[in-house]
Length: 468
Image (cartoon, rainbow, N blue to C red; front, side, top):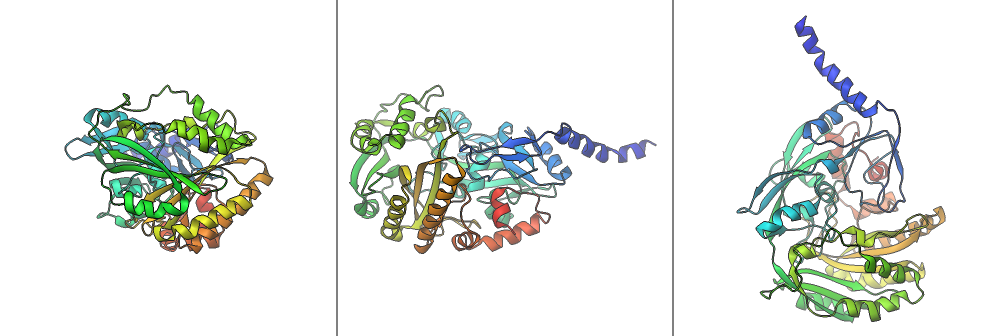
């Protein structure tokens, strides 16, 4: 009798988990930071242990989607009637070695939390995006990059990951162990499983000094090659293109320095209100002379002097500085395009022509640099590339969305014509043909997904669109 009851335990456990997930029977809506993509899911869970995630994946028969900070902008973290795994409570530090400059974390942790932990040891994250609010799992899933010279895709700073597959198996993946899963899951947008843990390489928290210079855009590539690319002291670098003429750029560089810091904070303060930043974005995007004022008054004032600060300070930006009072009638959105460095002079005239022709309300275009990807299946840096990060404002009506779709497809064609690609975390406007031209190894990723996830359990709007 006792043995029979014991055999019932797996069934009872599965029933209990199902009741926890679906007992209320009410729908939930998942949206991203743009507020353009509301998606009604069946249920949301916020696990705090690996076993909770395993149980949910194994017992749920419908689609499963995974989300973190929800900073992607096209539904990459959800699909209709899915079980949504919200990873933000899964945020512990598991292991740390100051000597080896390594840290192992749960995937729902934010970069800011890592920074707060490692800063007292005078260590810093090796590669991440500009803003520290993102979760590690989300950053790995889109294979982010930042402004790091000598860096590139985040995969270059990852020692190993642990991932839960569709059958509930928890496996370790690295460049030497289950390498196909490693190079598929990083940059795989949740299509292969749930990344639950990552071991990351750290680096020194150097003091850096800021310099800047305004130059013609046609001079920038040679300036970069001569002054930035091989300078081992440069830690951060980007160049901002000024709209609407797109003729000039301001390059901003942060170099290691022995000078004393002039900014006393180790990390950017949590309680900062960003009133000036928000006002500046409003002026630039809405006032008739806003873009001229930015170029000739705001930024010359902003970039006065040569401040010296800690690397961690410059790596701890908060997305709140970008957040408007409302996104109901208009919203700020990102896009990004990558071209080989030798194609820089071919791409930027095409880009600027498309943006002017379509009257795009561009706030900024930031030029970044990235090393070649080491082998992720959906690599956006098939060679050494320049990234063009486009930040713009659009209306929220359906007509507005159709206008954006039109010029976005034109920009994608322009990047492909220059042997480049576009970035997948943003609005899903590319045709299937454009996707396959930009991501030449997508078929191998899909074959791996079919092998690991034969019932297509792990879904979101990105893979609903392109995985047939």
